[in-house]
Length: 209
View 1 (cartoon, one colour):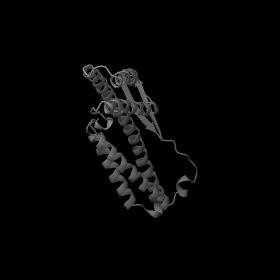
View 2 (cartoon, one colour):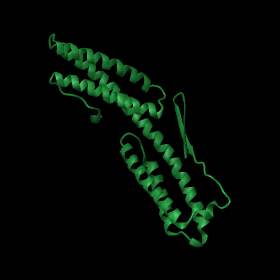
View 3 (cartoon, one colour):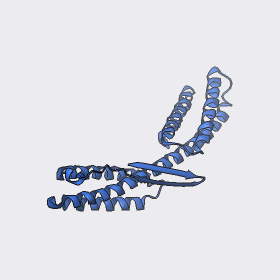
């Protein structure tokens, strides 16, 4: 299965397609046991996709997606309960149609998940930038000490990182790069928290977001 994501300006579209090997005896080589195993794997995917959709529901309207999942789950259930050993080819073809729809939903879910992660990462970056500005204002009243100066320098360094990440998040970010950005945000948070601990302060963690 292949997912395709395309962006032109503010327009974002996604689709997916499946490449299936063909052979003259393809349907005959798939036994009823093979088909039942494939159906079971499809059920597990639907369960995971449903759990992910529920987690995204707070930030994205997943009602139609969940409705589609429920429909596919019902179709799989009906298929598994009505497999005709004497006409296995029909059941195999029916399963392939369902699997194709599942593949398309998988591509959509991947795109929605990435969009939500980007949105959350951008929100968190902006929140941390405001937090650093606030902290720099607060430590100005703590007097001059090696600890305060070290923390101030650390905040400046973290602020530069956040500005770079913010600029990156406002472009089209590949999935692999997005995971790297999330890791960098975690490192920035840990750096700020570490400095706050040195000043007996209270930190702000990525998990809160």
